[in-house]
Image 1 (cartoon, rainbow, N blue to C red):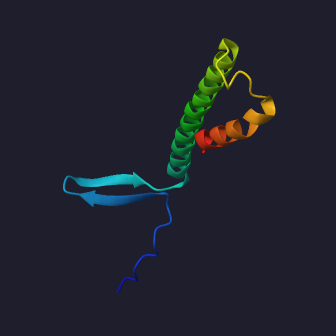
Image 2: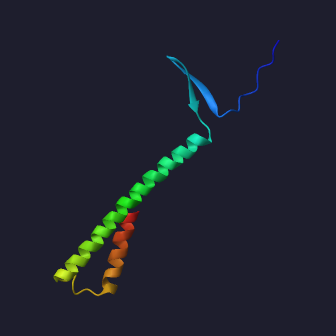
Image 3: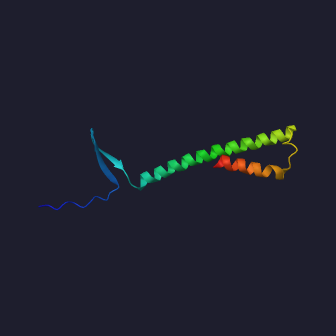
Length: 92
């Protein structure tokens, strides 16, 4: 009698579907691509959030320059905490 073979430790596994055998990659290459996709999605999220923060900052600058009260009369120390909260919320 022939002894059963040891489990295969290759990077490719074979799965069967109704059309026949297809190879599915499960090795480190696929994991790197998955991480790269996640990193790209995170980078897109951060870029969008940064654009919103910049837009808000430009809006505040324009409103202060136009003389809109009470924003134009506010001291930088008075604006620091609300801006910190806004930026923290937008970048989270």
